[in-house]
Image (tube, rainbow, N blue to C red):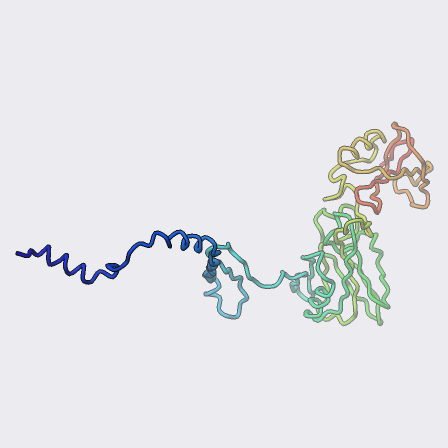
Length: 304
């Protein structure tokens, strides 16, 4: 008598796909050697899946705005794709003038020309290697064929240029203390209807090994002696201050006694090889080599 289990066994044996397979022990070793001798196929690299992230503000602003976009693959970290580098200059209109300031002191000069031209201004901008207090600051203005009728050494905030029978005022944007006692400004205000070429000089950091073309006051903001008072200190005291600030002593100069004590003319200054410790420092000057200081000294203190 057959049971249900016997019928199930018979059915499985009839339909077993490996029922006629027998182990070949002799061939197994050779097959295994063939597998080990065959190099594995290279694994397929999985392409990262990218996800586009758009800030919510960009969706509200409309298609006319250039907005930053972040493309973020899940496996290799974020990659930022955005607009070109920020502008080299900034412009704003103040009454009848255009106010210009430097944003990037290291930009390509062609960018400055293009940005001035976009404002309808014919301005050639020179960037000169300068000491730290003058970097990014306006330090000279002129016009080809024109005459500068106000001496920039007067510390005035306005320069007037005579050209083609006109007097063109160029006003400095005042810099709050950053320039020290050196003539400079944070930018300039130019008449909107100006139709003459101008040359501006702004300061930039020196490149490696480059010397200063323009030097500020050594105690001004950012300079090597920032915030210090050297006038009427002894030579020994000032030498110590220079060492503490990592500055180099360049040269000594002295002046004859007389009315030039308080505001000595450069032609009256005489170089000397050394100065006694007890002499007094009247002024300190930056040399064209970075962090190098010259001292104007005398056996007597300055009277003011």
